[in-house]
Length: 99
Length: 373
Ligand code: SF4
Ligand code: SF4
Image (cartoon, rainbow over all chains, first blue to last red; front, side, top):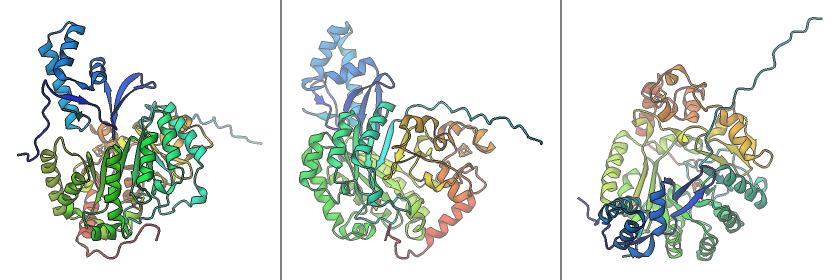
């Protein structure tokens, strides 16, 4: 049982990277990494696009719509993938929930 | 005349190593606290022997070029360096992720603001216990606890994310729940709970610090429960007592694979306790290029790959998981750094180690031997 409600990412969630979590190029290993305290995660192209779009203004729903048009993929599927990825970041405290 | 011609010894082919991910810069050994488990060596460097600002900045630049992503600014107490803000600014200019590992003593509101302004990414604040009396006794510094609470508040105000770091041992392990609560109260996103490791000063305090088996099992359970309860609030990174585990830890993620340490005088080490191994030769970062030290240094290549391993490890299916455990622990307990870590259940020395630990755990703790005092 948890006495602290876990953060749930929904279509209306608005999020951004908190201070202390940042995306940069790793020129030595030639990929993009997301850096957090004691953690470095190599991101694939899709994850990079998602992270770069987290502006603390657009909701998950709006982002899903945009990506669906951009990548010609079903919006539901994209929304699901984004929410799963963001939940993972949030559980690692690598995400700031703006709304 | 009979001259024996011996072939020129071919240097052992350097083993392909990945570029390092992290560097721990021990900026100074000076520290107002005197924790009895401090990982600094018994022979502490003096202020006059420390590297200059320019030397450190040059090392940071080389580290970034080499592939280092995380730079840990540590000590001693890094705030004892007057140039801490300048060093942090330099780290940020090389795009290094900077982490300040501090006791909090020596920081004030303005200095934290300055650090935030120049781009410090993260602060890791140590706590020695969950109450002023118990914490200040372990740290050997009166008023330390209160200062930490204040520092945590200033860090939070600055927006820099905070991790709380606690070394747990016989005399504070029963306060684990309170320390977790404290971390949440201080606004930390993460807590690192590491069970004391018996190198350096801790080795001198075995009877004061060695937890009992019951304490360890209870701590494991407390952490497991808290990890669930606090998911999304507090990330818990826990290093359990290794002699109650079955296999050793991959110390440093494997020798010369993930990270390097630079001492206050510029000596480059594969791990903070590496100087306890007499056969290793260390290079200085102001004399030899860092890349050369990392890829070709004798100390770094000494325990890479599996050539050096005893048969027990070389033939073991876990050798790519734990790499035979901790070299410094093998040195301390088996008298040979190239032995299997005696913590391993497969080591013939394991029983002896567990017995010795049980004896120290049961012992009535005496006075702490404080670091450097
Ligand atoms: S462990 Fe304690 S004594 Fe050692 S550097 Fe850290 S705060 Fe100072
Ligand atoms: S025998 Fe060596 S490699 Fe195998 S588990 Fe033990 S320490 Fe690790």
